[in-house]
Image 1 (tube, rainbow, N blue to C red):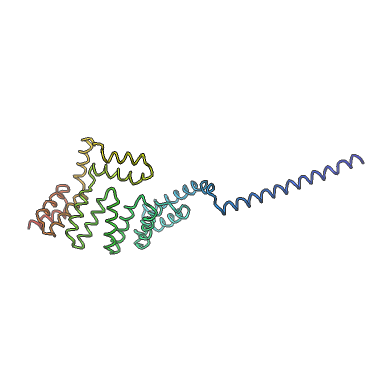
Image 2 (tube, one colour):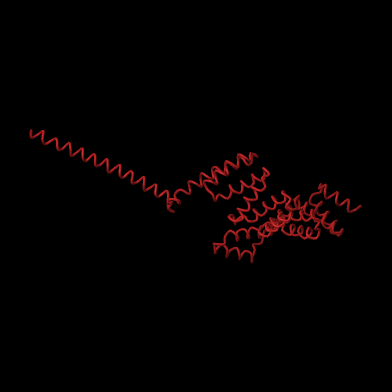
Length: 294
């Protein structure tokens, strides 16, 4: 009896201990679940910091898929990918910008304008590009005044403003504002990509993106005052490339035409000849020069 009476209390004790362990375990698990649920709701910064790299990686992966579709001309499918990426990472500027490009290609101009206006407020590093895109969109919609305004702002903020001035000048030609056209094409040529302009444009770009980095800004200011002298070989190569630049030839031809319409025939002839010197087979410049001579 004594032996049996000694074993029964032991079993109860073990069972009670197991029950307590199970209760405590379940209570702990529910407590942890409740805690994580609360943490998810309040979104503390440390949790955001942990999840952000993973979200960004996923968003970039989806954006890359959109980029491939964009290059293939599958704009509607690309839009779906960019929207997915933006939902995951709302500040993914590249996805937002490419979404605007897709809308442009699909002639959804109002949607594209909305995108690039939004980027003007959020993407301060590419202000000139966003103004340029807006100018192109307004031009396609026939809103010439807004297009001109955006081309001007693009040129003012662009380290390399040649094409902003180029297309602005073309608009002035359409409006028959010959004096403004002459002035604008001259600005385009003044900002053509010489080695010196490229150097200073690069410095302007670095200065713009380094406003919060005092040491870099100090170096940029020093280089602007005391530029590095380019080697003669680099200059020669660069100038030879420019002499074959058909876009520059087009600018001289446009400038010649603006002078022609403004009755300044000697300047018109000079610029037509420069255009043909750069691009000897330039049909339009040949025709313009022939009309001038007749």
